[in-house]
Amino acid sequence: HNNLLVTPAFELQGGITYRFSFFHKEDGTNICWDSLYVTWGRSNRKDSMTTKFGRALTKFSFDEFVRFQEDFTAPTTGVYYFGIVVVPLLGVCPGHSSRSFGD
Picture 1 (spheres, rainbow, N blue to C red):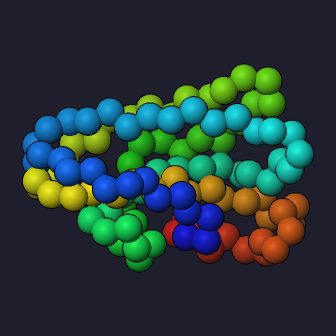
Picture 2 (picture 1 turned 90 degrees about the vertical axis):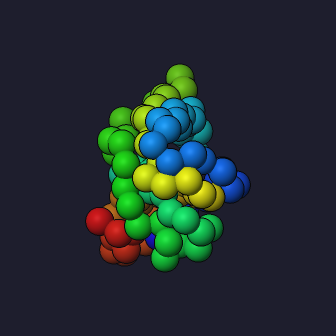
Picture 3 (picture 1 turned 120 degrees about the horizontal axis):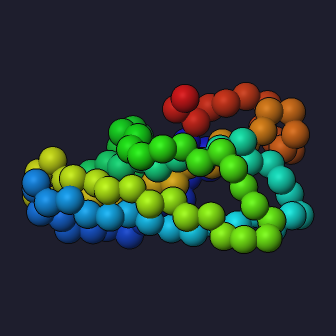
């Protein structure tokens, strides 16, 4: 995941459902996003963030915030990290010529 924003660690209890949400808004200066999605892992390393959950967001707005909100059930008790992965538009975003984001 080249474009990965990782959360701080969360200590979660196995079998409990938690709600993960955030808001995003395109600022209009660089519309380079094709989509974004969320992954989770047991460490904050990008090679640990391999399990996607929830839906991918594909609609971006310049004038209002869009909310990502999905429930996550921790498989076991322990530390979890969540990653927000931004997928660039091919051929539009400088420096991005292929999708190398785990698709």
